[in-house]
Length: 601
Image (cartoon, rainbow, N blue to C red; front, side):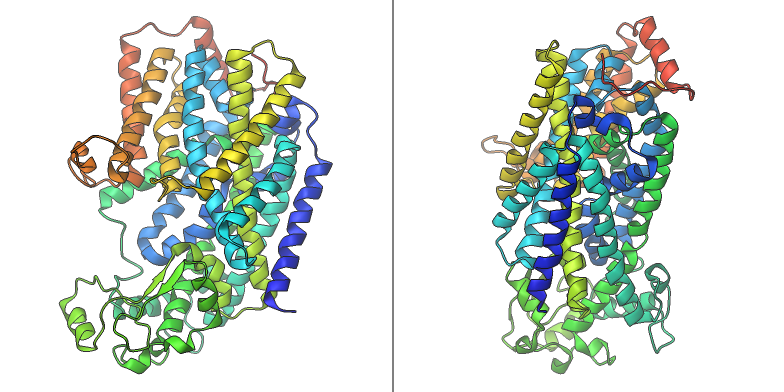
């Protein structure tokens, strides 16, 4: 059976499974729509949480980022996994005990203010809509390569699939669909990694293969990879960092607290029956997440080696890479390169008209390397590879069986669709439960609220698809921006709401607004989203990365600090919370008992 037919069959089977589950698990009440009735078993909730957590950014982009950045890419592993630990230990059990449907509802009730709830909704919508752009883009990438359709068509199909199981099933349908999606995506990630690890090292466990010697040699994989990349003018794979040490620290911190503040993941802990079950599901989710996150460094390193070895065959024979025959002839490009060229995510340009592909770091700071490149007649790097294709193309580069390539396609789509559904659920709940019921129509019936939730979900799907088709100018790095928004606005408010009984509504509102606006200002100044005539955008903040070298993607951590500072400063000069609110905070922190999740005010 040819590759394209195999892909259609595998992906089609997974889509049929998702739709079947959605029809079986239709939501018939607001409790089922928002929190799956509050009765999901811990193990299943752990799988669903892992699928919700591991978005297209985790499945498609993370290994690609590590592959490109080397050691510096470890900040994504530390930030995202560390953020989950923060969420599981410091937030999830207490929020579950509070017994509400959504994060804005917690903030509104804890800070005894509809204004606080409304500000939280605005922060949630800003973070979630920004994040969902990346998911829809991931759907478009996977469809455009594997199903032979345009990325736009892929987004339309993705919208239709999510519409079926999210609008009709609500959180109940999403939960059981995400269990299936987790199984698909984890198999799609680990099986190719096992194949490639055996090919390169003879070790069937990728995590161990990363530290093993290359098959038939006494040289370790990482040592050989270091040699390969430095020969091509790049920094050492095992030591290169992402900017300054301070930026790497702040970036990791921003990802951690941003991850812990993402509302679509927090909502998953409202779907279990008890606080104990919330803790258990958090532990199971960590196990399920670890399967992918511990495999990612091996996937990244092995893909980087295979890519370089394919484009520069002289690497395999330890030949002089500046000799013409050490570089791939354009006419001998393997089929996988030609297929990815059609997507625009892999590009080749013959800058020196020699008919061969030179893939190297033409910005190398080494004078010796530049002299050798010039002497060889090289006119600049000729191959551009988008980091997002590393995981998806990896099985093709390694010449794995067609069914493995098809499984990876299904896994990439499962990762993007599962997180998109979780984000849409958070957006829908914020609009229907926190705005419609909480602010505008407090006496709305359960049936009316359920209808409002489904309508807002449908509208959110349309908006998400439109943003995926027409991403805004600042959409480059949207995932990092989404984490920064959550870090600077929601995470501090949730932490203060749980652990500071003296924090009042004025402090919380001021903190959320300060953190959100300073982060958006810094990011938009770098992206050029200000319309001030005659003003260079970066002049507004003193130049690129002007705040101690902090990049805009990392600035969410700084925004969070501003949030805390402003909140406590305002709290000191305003009236403390009512006594019953302080007792409420003390009771939420007490580790005994829990009320049912009914969403009642």
